[in-house]
Each structure stands twice: as C-alpha cells, then as structure tokens.
Image 1: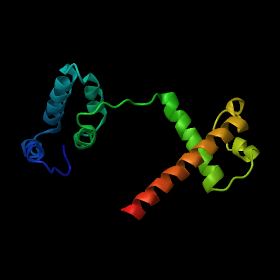
Image 2 (image 1 turned 135 degrees about the horizontal axis):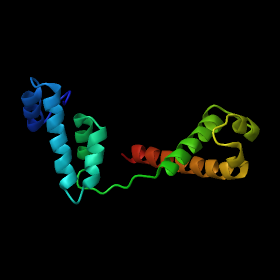
Image 3 (image 1 turned 120 degrees about the horizontal axis):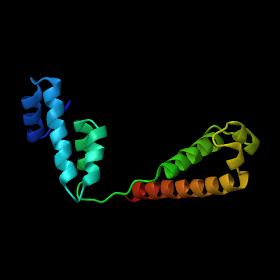
Length: 142
C-alpha cells in the first residue's frame, strides 16, 4: 500500500493492510476514494487518488497542502512539449536550420511556422538566461 511509510499513521495503515488480501485492500482504497469524492471542496482529489498509488498521492498532498493548483489543458501540455523539443534540438543538439527542425516532424507540417517558433525560442532562451542569472546572483549573495 505504502512502500516506505514515514508518518505514524502511514505505518499504522501499512500494518493493518500488510496481511490483508488484495480485494480487502482495494475495498479500503475505494472507501477512501468515495470519502474524498464526497468532499465538496476537493472532488477532483478522488479522481487524482484513483490514478496514483497511495504513497504518490500522499506526496502530492504534502507538496500542495492548503494550496489551489490549476492544471494546464492537454493542448497546453502538448504545446509545451513540442516547444521543449524544438528548444532541445536547436539549442542543445545544435540543429541550425529550421528546415531540419521541420523534417523532425515534431508538429504537423501545416502547423510549422519558423517565424513563430523562432520568436518563442528566443523568448524562452531569454527567460532561461534571466533565471540562471538570478540563481547565480543568489549564490553570490548567499
């Protein structure tokens, strides 16, 4: 259930279910999911709980406890991954030409715009350099 319990309640839960059959453990997890779903302020937690292992779910809760988070859309994730691939090939792997980038088929040919990609890559490069500068400044002042 929890591979490496650290909290007392996690250890108790582990002890309760370590000798139980899988169906009993799953039944318990189903009850937890229902209780999470009943919480009107966090119905989405039930969905998140259903796709994560309990230990990972607890890590997520510990990380974001008492905060509201908003997830990007699938389209936003897709665009971020595509842009990351363009950045990787252009700035890390050293692909010089936009024709070479086009041939990598990262996006549909009809959606490929060297001007748009160039602008976005320049913006990302500038922001990354700024972030690196801030980190170095912190280290220097630290």
